[in-house]
Length: 247
View 1 (tube, rainbow, N blue to C red):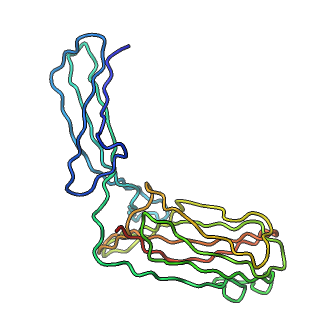
View 2 (view 1 turned 180 degrees about the vertical axis):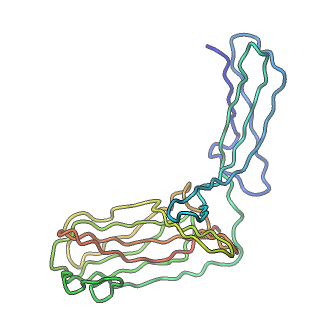
View 3 (view 1 turned 60 degrees about the vertical axis):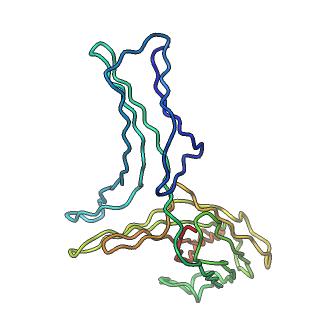
């Protein structure tokens, strides 16, 4: 076995808040004596941006992820290979001030309520009702609600919850908007019983969500789509903007 290097943080979940000290140990494992020319430890915070190919000639950079990393380097002689080890950790922002007010939303999905439909007359008749308990959401708590299929001329194939992250970036020359699906949960499969309440329950994925952010040139927003797929492959989508915060 050669020489190995590891970084072990004292906090097992690797989650820290602003102002807290990140502490732990650097572990060097070797059967023989390790000669080196210095051990350095650096901390980096980075935002990864990606170039969109949707508009030729226009630079569009979109938020991808924020990473915080500890990196340990051991410099050794020319005859021995330098050792490097990285350890990623998570930084949570401080709780936002003010009490979050619940914002329940009751909804009805039927052919007459749909938008951007060219051939409305060809749609089968259906009626779906439901309620989101709040569109103002605490990021550490699930999105909840209920959905009821009251009627449908054709069998239901699937009902899904789709969580979407929307990133807007730009300046005086113009703004670019990009929407990315970050989670999809099936809450019903097959032709569900009519008038039967189906629970809506979605846990926000920790590594792909953050509190809603809005600045002059940059925004991160979230939406949830309720997607109903009928047996004849008609796809019906209802969109609800969400506001995420941390408390």
